[in-house]
Image (cartoon, rainbow, N blue to C red; front, side, top):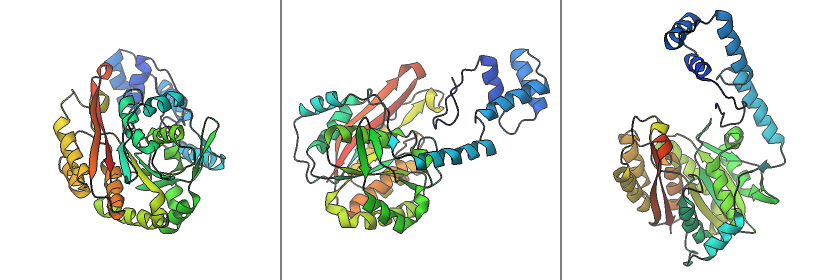
Length: 351
């Protein structure tokens, strides 16, 4: 199964030979080399016409990163821009979430300023999600600034989604005054990455839980891509100045996962990430965002923690908001046997 996470190309089922041929068409190989490698692996002789015909079919379905694909991207952007709202269609048991969170002994959460939550499959980390969002249940805040991770596509270090979302019959409204402040601070280019929000679960999952627990609230959805410390710090200052008039009503959410290792993520085998995870978490808990960033950068982030840039920005803004410390709510490692891979995740509250 070939599936485009952006949903631009249609899903395709390829047999083994077709999949091999697709993998050989990398934009560098000449047709003669493709034919030779295909013959060595399959014993099948392909003609130039057969290969070109296959390429044309793939192009028609927007499989290749070419002019055809980028043209389609622009069409999809325009389509999203013209929609009255973004519809989030994910199976989610709202009533179960409400019931389970009601069982949790609530602590006084009014002094909280932000939280790190996972965005791994909800069924995998359901207990951690419940523990995390139980702090938000009785939180006296109405504006949630959500920082996510772009998994499939990004053009900008910092991007914002400027449309309302719809879950079932409920409209999740953006805080338009803050959105306008962000536009004035950064320019309208922060809205160019609209396609990155099309199927991005790192910002959609927090909306599901907020929708289950809160009635009257507003959101700002943002994605943080790769950037330098200086870039991220400058962006953090701009965001802080944009939200400052609403600071008493703002709550920050960083939606990230930790390490991704194993065959699913390009590693020959699984290895233990606990030591790396816990050291990184310790830096986060102590609000040492620069130390956390350097710790991963110096090791080339070899465990592939996807929150490196999002968390730096998140913590930098929290410090400007006066937050002093973090407290670990949960830390777990999920082992996916079928792909011989693991993903770790955490939840941390900040006061």
